[in-house]
Each structure stands twice: as structure tokens, then as C-alpha cells.
Amino acid sequence: MANDYFSFRQFTIRQERCAMKVGTDGTLLGAWAELPKNLPQRPPRILDIGTGTGLIALMMAQRFPTAHIVGIDIDEDAVRQAQENVADSPFADRIDIRLQSLADMKAQQTDGKAEDAETFDAIVSNPPYFTDALRCPDAQRSMARHTDTLSYRTLMDCAWCLLNDDGELSVVVPADCVSQMESEAILAGFFKRRDCAVKTTLRKAPKRHLLSFAKHACPLERTEGLLTSDWHDKLMKDFYL
Image: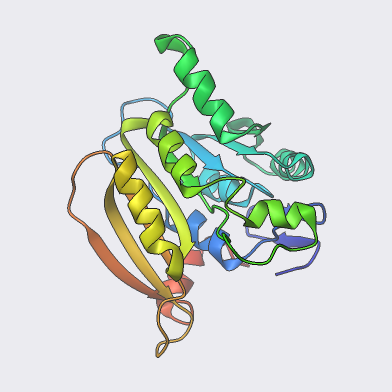
């Protein structure tokens, strides 16, 4: 998937100026994340944190045709590329890509007037995941991959403030990061709602987890997915050519 562009059924992702290319984690999250049930009668609002190429924002726009999506990133090149990808898509009127940090968005929400507060029905993020690993010499790629640019604690604290009371936060993380992500979620006040353990092959341990969190206690739904299976084909059927 490391070409300069990747074509999906309804949009194309150009990625030559982005550190993180189209990959399995992003496509899985974009196809798996959900909107809460029984939303008010208004267009849903979705926030994509660390939008990169705009992939997940575009996937959510395709899946939820009345939703308005905001994608934020701190990488100027990625933001420009995502804006171009969105502008060339059928969903340009429903996606807003911004050069903005999550902390700044939270500060604007908490400092503003209550009636002007920007909150969301769903938040999605494919967050940085390296902590103590050796840094990549490519500064742009290193920023996209290391948690000191967006720690799990910051992600959870800010998501709590920006998420509506009945909203849902969805993330994808490597299997060895699940306990850390869940700990920070609990500290922020979240309850785990869904957990999909994703395997690359049937006989191996899960490689990554798709997780969703809610602000209220709820039954936990545990599932398992296999990349080489009908589960994956069904999940991606509306996107892959």
C-alpha cells in the first residue's frame, strides 16, 4: 500500500507528502467505527484525530452520508494533502480538515461559551503507538508514530471533553498497547464498549485491537477478526476495488 496513491471505490488517497501511508490499521478503523444509536434528529458530527491523508475521515463520510466530519492534524504537509484528497472526493462539502492540535481544540471548547462548544457524536483515532522505541530519522514519520506527540492520556482526556454524553470513541492499537490504552480510558472516565481482536493468521495471537469506549457503563461486546477471512472481505467490500 506504499504507492503515491491508493484508489478506493468512491475516492482516491494521494499520499506522497504524508509520513504515514494508507495501511491496514486505518482502513480497519474506518470500516469498523460506529456512530451511537438513537442520535438526535440532526446531522451527526465525527472527529478524526490525527487525520493524516484524510483516509478515515473519507471512509466515515462514505459510510454515514448525513454526517459532518472534522479531521485534525499537526503535520502541515499531511493537512494540505488531506485537504486535496477531500476536495477531489464526493464528500468535500461534509469534511473539514484543520491544522490543529487536539489540546488546542479542547482548550477552545472549554474556554468558549457553552452554546458555541464544539462537541462530537463519534471520535475516531489511529493514534501514535511507539513509546520507547528507537526514533526514525525521518522527523515527519517519527512525529506521526511516537506517543510524545499525542499520548494516550491526552487522547483520552481531550476525547472526554469533546465527546457528547452518548457518544462513542473508537481507536485501533497494537496488541501490546491495549492495556495502556484501556488504563488511560478508565482514568478519564470511559467504559469499554467493544473490543475486536484482529489476527493476521488463524494460529497467531492478535496483532492489533479495535476498541470503542463510551461515557456510561454498557455491556462489553468482544469479537475476533481475521485479515484473511470473510470477516475482512465483508468489512471492506464497500471500499476496496
